[in-house]
Image (cartoon, rainbow, N blue to C red; front, side, top):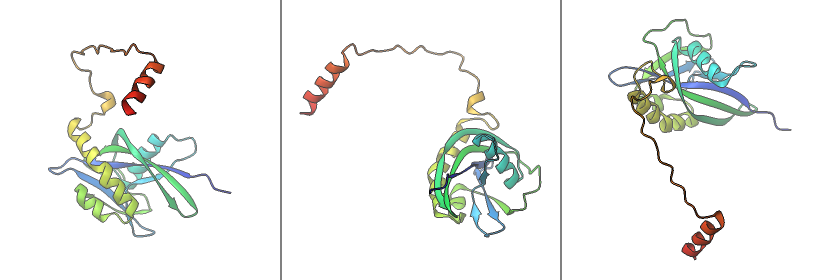
Length: 178
């Protein structure tokens, strides 16, 4: 019988610098460099778990922004499903690192990708890292997309409706493709 996947959450954590920096953490037990993440506590939402885990593993308070994607992989005895958000870290740590974490490094994206120990995390960060960096540039530090002010003027979008029936649209499509 297959076991239910383990649910976890984490962040692609950025810190402002001349070249934005990405947080990776070194696990004490396996001496591996990984993205900050961890399992959900009972009743905890993935977003709340992501914020808590990143705070515990990096020592930094973070602003949580948009969802970046999900990484699924096999770990000891089953599948692990990890949801990631883009996060921005405060300038200084606010707490000590949790016991399981030996160190935190803040590296430019390409160096962070290279340093990660697990191939699936390297591939994930290589794909979503540029998206996270672009979003950081597009939104002022400390402002989430959800909380940005509305534009001063909103242009109405005129709805254009194709008046043909679904059957007629299908007939037209078949004629074009035949």
